[in-house]
Length: 579
Image (cartoon, rainbow, N blue to C red; front, side):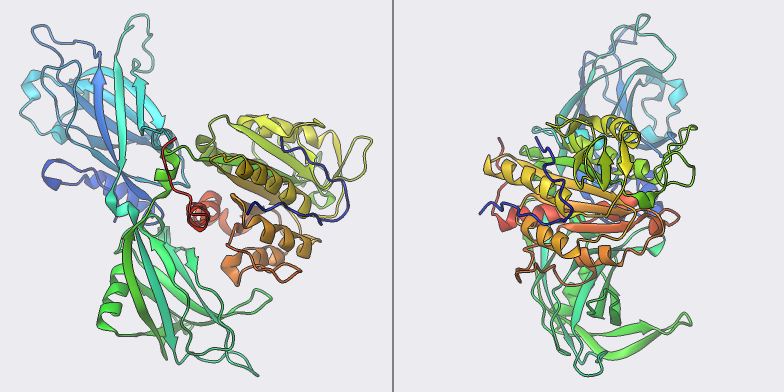
């Protein structure tokens, strides 16, 4: 499946389009400050769902002489440096080898990160049972066993329940402690995560930024992550030649913005076709603030920074003509009903990357094991998406190179096969990529059309078969594309399919044309025949813009993916009916 058929030197080709923050909820509604601090300190006020984890166990070891064990669950989150941060303690269940704990752990699920959790069970000594759980010293309690999993492994189960075998502490052999029992974890999504807000924005008295006509305004709504960095989560259409625009409704969910009190930046800009839009003004408000503006039927003045750390308040005003909340099907409900995200990757092998055997090449394989930019993008994105793909067999292609004894190909199978493109797991992509570097000659030009068409063909066939699959194509490139119109045509056709496209720009090239493909920067794409894309399916990020910043490549790339998925499902009226 997914074999590349094109060796042509153009990107032309038709696609067959088929017609608040989280806390650990204790008894009495108390919160776990450790979780709140952990999340807030890392800027996790953005895209998430609140998940409640419930715990039970069976077959625990009996560590008491005259009675059964008195177990307690302690949960840790694994940090990037592999250290563990404690985030939750359950109550102590007395005299039970098959306990069901009442206290639930509420955790913020972030699609764009791998959230590894470690669970440790302890038998609490009788003399400490009148003490508060958070005051207990764990080294004074008897260890019963531990287990680990990634949060996405739980929420992608159709039952949202996972059973983990408890194991001994690291350094202790299973032979000396053969039986530790099982931990059962069940996940429930909170109601707040299912609320979607429909908003109609209107502006009055916008300033004209054009010499011979009025401005062409549009709005971009961004959430604020760590250190105040904005990440776009929604936008309006562009309204031509209009200083008093009323835009079509935008839809924002708690999954996108964090909570009703999370700050949002709403920026109004004058659209320019070159991607360099002129700022008209902006405001910072939460959903709660916007609701109050709607109820009061009041506007708020836009402002612009003056360059001296101050903001100039403008006469232009933003109004909220409509603000309604409804309960919608969520991203997690679709996953639980059997929908999968299928990962695909396409890698740029054009000569502008440099000789792979030389250290200054973007394709250089460092003997020390340090990953190059291509490898890092594959690993960072693949590690997140792999948990949403049950068979973990990923189509992988290269483009812009000359395979042995063949002409330049703009879509070849990375594994060297002439009949299939799939490889096993992220490691399979990495191995095939390294092997391909020594089996092809870097060439050019840089064309996206053929690989987009190949990905779209797979998505189209899957849709025709009624499969519950949504495809995510990662394109990693170092250069300016030479088939811009053909790429636009392919993307407009693909916008009807279950497909999103992530583009990572590596190196120092001018990526202005990539920004045109990403509709966050302006109006929706239009094909050569005049057809407009039914939805935005592209997200672009230049690695140089984020590799030294506060947000990761994965955060920047994946912020919109759940929204693109939900937009597709709602356009096609597809419901998350259990299989």
